[in-house]
Picture 1: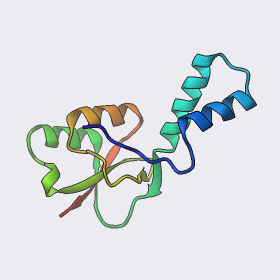
Picture 2 (picture 1 turned 180 degrees about the vertical axis):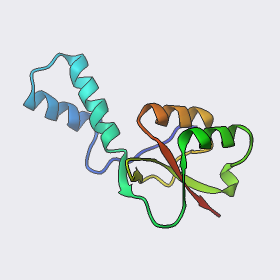
Picture 3 (picture 1 turned 135 degrees about the vertical axis):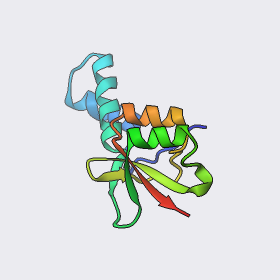
Picture 4 (picture 1 turned 30 degrees about the vertical axis):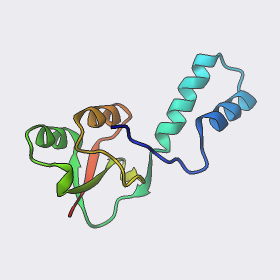
Length: 113
């Protein structure tokens, strides 16, 4: 399952155009800059007072051994006190957990049903 993330007013193509206007960089450097900008826009929403904030390593182990499944509730990836704005985060998929960890996610904000 692939996660779809909506980034407010920012697309890869517009970021590439912005980078080309502002900088004279080789294509690879522009691609790396675009990726950093997209990642920085992943975690935009404040974490609410409700929900459980769980370290991503602890979360991954719990999912791996069946402690949490998607029918129990829903969650968002989080970093630095902000979380993703997508209600479609697949926080119970081990591959997705690893992918988002590599993009900087440090926690999961979990909302029980």
